[in-house]
Each structure stands twice: as C-alpha cells, then as structure tokens.
Length: 222
Image (cartoon, rainbow, N blue to C red; front, side, top):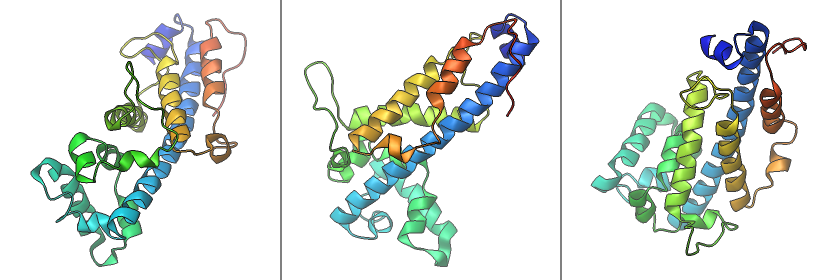
C-alpha cells in the first residue's frame, strides 16, 4: 500500500479508496481491451480468409510465414496447432492465438508477407500527410501500447499513477483508452453500441482524479 499512501499524503482512508478504484478501473479497461482484441482478430481473419482461403493460418506455416523473418509468427501457430492436436478447426486456432500474435501481423515483415494489404481492415483510417503517417507501423505502435497496458493489468500492476512514481494520475489509462476508441473508429465499429453498459472507464478516471486526502466520503466498495 506504500504507493497508494504516498499518493494520498499518508491518509489511509483515501489510499484504500484509491486502491479499490484502481482495481475497478483495471477490470473495466481489461474488458475494453478484450473487446478490441476480438474485433481486431475477427477483422484480420475475415480479410485474410477472403485473400488466402479458409485455412490461411495453418497453410501459412509453409506459405506466407515460412520465411526466417516471420519465424516467431510461424512458431506461435505451430504451438497452438500442437495443443489442438486432432481437435483442430480454423476457428479454434484463431481463438488460441493471443493479442501479441495479432499485433505482430502489422510488423513490417509479417505485414509484407501478407501482401501489404492488412490496412484494408481500417476503412476509416485517416490518410497520411506530411506531418503524420497512418501506416502499418502506426497501428503496430498503437497495439504495442495497448498490449503493454493489458500486461500491466494482467500482472496486477497499478494503472492510477504516473509511471514509476507515487503520484496519482489517470493520464496513462486515458491515453491508451483513446487509442482503443480510435482503432474502433478506424475499423468502422460503433464502440458505444458494442460496449454499451460495460464501459465506465472515463467515469472511474474522473473519480480517481477527484480523490483528495482527508476525504469525508466513505471508501468505495468492490
């Protein structure tokens, strides 16, 4: 609790409230991240299925991912295939591959191996201009940041502080939340409809930001 106490000027009541709200915010964001992961992988799967056939992932072992430059992607597919054994189906293979796998399909080698066409899953992506590029590297960077947040939550690391400091801040959570919404919009997905009644991220961020030591309000409960 030391970090929470430091961020609350030593006030135990405020520190406990901050701790609980961090847990709830983490739960909310993990749900939102799960939604973007599912939407992204489904869009990618539909795109490559139309381009390469129904078994594009399994066939990719000796096909588009056979190169040394995409060895990591190939290895992950093989590992899931081996775990499925005789229970293989393409949909099970898709589900068995994690967020990192789908993110790396936008890395330069994997993106090129797939025919450099994967940005088509973002029909509303802004056009690149002189100052800003909206290319596969941009998407890869966005997904890397979201994946980092996902891993922090999965490892029970707090997300209500300035990184590596005991200073209360929701900017890290807000910034990554904005990236998620942006990707939904690029994919032409109505994120408000998709996450209706399950997304309270900004409300929780506001509650955390408004917390102050010596608060007279009772600690929130889980």
